[in-house]
Image (cartoon, rainbow, N blue to C red; front, top):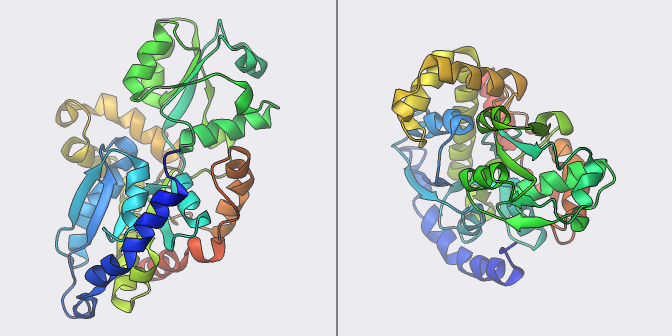
Length: 344
């Protein structure tokens, strides 16, 4: 993982000054809500749609100006941005954020961006007949990078079947499209891809979906709202993050209840090719899978400290965190709790 102690401490060193800038006008928030600065993933897929609607439309319904949104390709850089205090909130990956906390960064996770993941693991069934086949050095697994949340997720599932991920062959390969082509060409034996891509792959040969994370884990979290600790301790900023989670959960509920809400948001905000032309025939099965099978948009926010605590052994086994994270401070449930109280 590229998120090193040195880089985190360098980011934290600048956070004091950045915090002054970010919270300098906070006193005006009660009278006139300030524009939030938010960093999000460089792409918006189906699973992200309620989040993006919350940012683009939901915050406005709560009286906020349209937020300043910067897209960043790297999840690690999103985390570093929040550690440095250069944005008010970011949709950070949980594993990198927890590493930052375990290294001493004052950052908080305040609510889910979505639950679980839309990615699954597809394998060449001629090469992978059982989990033991992952120990065969010729059966390479293509992943985006070692140490990211998909690596940790896979490590945990392999461990459930008595396999140490260190005994497997990992090939780092960015982009789900590139990984899919590598699988189809026989260069690798297993890849993580989004479930709709998996449906295309299994029609092209002897391939099967081996791992569906929402079935492998009782709880799994990929992305959550990360905020600078010092900044959010300010009363007005605290209120803003309550409202961010309120807008997100409202969007979750509407997406679950109303397919048309999701479909309109996808056609407007998804970054995939020809999103605006997506048909109901294409979108409805995706919505059904995300909303009903995966529970990607939990109506109650599903943000409980004990759920994260269950995953600590998985993170430790994968070498994803250093030392013990302070979950009592890091997993800050007050924002979702307050949002739920207000939403009813």
